[in-house]
Structure formats: structure tokens, C-alpha cells
Length: 401
Ligand SMILES: Nc1ncnc2c1ncn2[C@@H]1O[C@H](COP(=O)(O)OP(=O)(O)O)[C@@H](O)[C@H]1O
Ligand SMILES: CC(=O)OP(=O)(O)O
Ligand SMILES: [Mg+2]
Image (tube, rainbow, N blue to C red; front, side, top):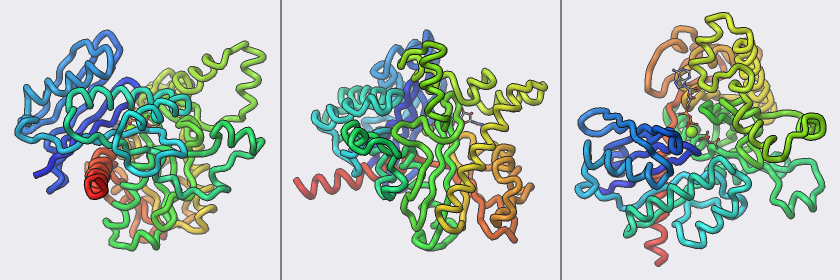
């Protein structure tokens, strides 16, 4: 049996899975949250159920230690199931990294160099890698990049209409993110429907804390809503998504906001949080039930933007076979799914209310039988996709070496 440990680091949390690659089943999975806060939390799902601990987790190194302690206390034993490799989610690969890449000191320098393009993510990803290297010094570590799946974007989709020379010099273009999820989900859809991936025109809506839409034509990403950084596109938990770039100029001049303050505003104090004070979609719904008008507007804005991208991508794809919802909101929130697709019957989209309302952790169809477009919910599994690519990368590097 070969097991791969996968670490999916976020700015203040990380998710992990230890995956048996013969069965592709998780032997354990978990979440380390609120890293850097006064009190952090670990949740570990092991062979004997779920255990939770509250403890101070000052940084990702301490978070990694807390994860290892959870394995020691609740199993499975990492000596019994030693990982043959550790796979890491790295958000920004720039124009350098498209393939899963075995981490070397030079690769680490390059990931660090890309931090200004993903300030919430790349530094945390790198801390996760360094902590894992200390804990598992004898196995290969492989970086799998969110940007990689979007390498197929055509120039017209990735180009921003600004001074071409300046853009080239400063690496300004659309890169796109959540690629590991968009790839995993669009391939899962084809398998589930038993249709050739190459025949399908798909829209994937990854709606988590960060959210992005992707137009997938025959298995290739042809457009996606996140851009140079994971800020553009959809309305998110705390990120604004699209706005007129002149808003920045205006706020800088009129409200005297500095570059760092604008960055903070748009990444951490905008989105549904900026409009309503709630960053979690469940809290937003509860506030709407209580009659909160700001919360209502936040949800309406979120849905308006989603619909905008669905229409745009149907046009770009020149047809549409599948729309799929994934990630925390997409997998769990029937009201968001129904709201995003309401009124789109003219595109051939008809949702079945009963199917949409069903609660399930499995891949499922939620469109009506007579809907021309099939609408699905697919639980994403970035960790499994990273584990597959990690195993492939170490196989290739062993063959090459
Ligand atoms: N039952 C639910 N209904 C609505 N939203 C949910 C539900 N469960 C989770 N979410 C949303 O999913 C988000 C987390 O999604 P996730 O994909 O785990 O995000 P990330 O990987 O970016 O942390 C939460 O912030 C919350 O808004
Ligand atoms: C790229 C990105 O936004 O990731 P997440 O949704 O995990 O924050
Ligand atoms: Mg995520």
C-alpha cells in the first residue's frame, strides 16, 4: 500500500488527508484552523471517528505539529502508514509552473517570488511546505499549482487590455485559480455522466470562501473568473470580485487609502462580509430570515454576479451541456443554486426543486429530466487530485533520475 499525505494550506488554516492510493480512500483527514489567533482548533477524522482539540497554534509550523499529534493520538499511525510523498497545494505558479513539481530549494525561492501575486496564499503554502519538510525529511514533496489547469486559456481570455510592454514586464495577465478543483470536478462529471470529456461544454462554479467560475470546453479551461490574483470575478466571503478599476483610484484620492489599505479592503473586508458583516453563507441566510436588508442585498449581489458569469460562459462556449456546483457553498446551499439558475430556462436550464433540496454528500444531478443542460452537484476533492498528481510526479522523477 502506498499512502500520500496532502496538505492544502490557506492563509489561516489548512486541510489535510492521508490517502491510500491503492483504493483512493482517505485513511484520515482533518482541518487545522485559526492559525495565529489566540486559540486554534484541530478537527481530525481518523479510524475511530472524529476528535477535536483547542490549543494555541501560532503559525503553520505549530499547525503541522498539531496535525502530527492528532495522528499520534487518534490514528492511523504514520509509522504504520508512512507517506511515500507529501503533496502540497500551491496557489500561484505564475508562468513558471504548470506541472506538478518536486520541491527543491530553487522551487521554494520561485514560490516565494510569486507571493506578491497571491499574498493571502503563497506565503502560507510555503510555510506548510517547510513545516512538512522538517517532519518528513526523507520523502519527496510535490507542489501542485492552482494555476496549472488554466494553462490552456487562449490569449484573448488571459490578456488584460493595458500597455502590453508594461504588462509583460510585471507578469500582468489572467492566471486563474482553483484549477485543481475545476479539473477534478469537470473530469468527475464526464465519468459520472458516462460521456466523453472531449464532447462536453461545461461551466464549473467553485463556491467556497474563495469562489471562481470556469468555462471548460472538451476538458480544457477556456476562461475563468479569477485573474492576476484570486480577487477578480465572483463576489466571495471577504473578497470583492469584479469592480471598476477606477474605484481604487477614486478611493486612493478621495479617502486617502494607501495601497496596503486598498489591498486589505478588497481582499479581507469586502464581498458578502463587506456588505453585511457576515462572511459565512449560513450566517448570511440567518440574517436574511431576521429581516436584515444589508444581508438581502449581499445575497442578491452574489447571485447577480454568478448569473452574469453563467451567461457569459454559455456565450463563450457557444453552447452548454453541463453546469456544476462545488465547494462549501456550491455543495450545500440549495438556495444559492436555485437563485443562480432562476430565469435561465431560455438557456435550456431547468432545475428540479426536489432534487436540488436533497441533502447528500455524493455527486448528483439536480436538473429536471427534460432540462437540455444537466446541472450537477459534485463534492470537490482537491486533496485526492493533488495526491494523484503527486504520485505521477514522483513516478516521473524516479524514471528520469
Ligand atoms: N450548509 C451550508 N450552507 C451554506 N454554505 C455553507 C454550508 N456549509 C459550508 N458553507 C460555506 O462554505 C464555505 C467554506 O467552503 P470551502 O470550500 O471549505 O472553502 P475554503 O476551501 O475556501 O475554505 C463557508 O465559508 C461557508 O460559507
Ligand atoms: C485561490 C483561492 O481563492 O483559494 P481559496 O478559495 O482556498 O481561498
Ligand atoms: Mg478551498
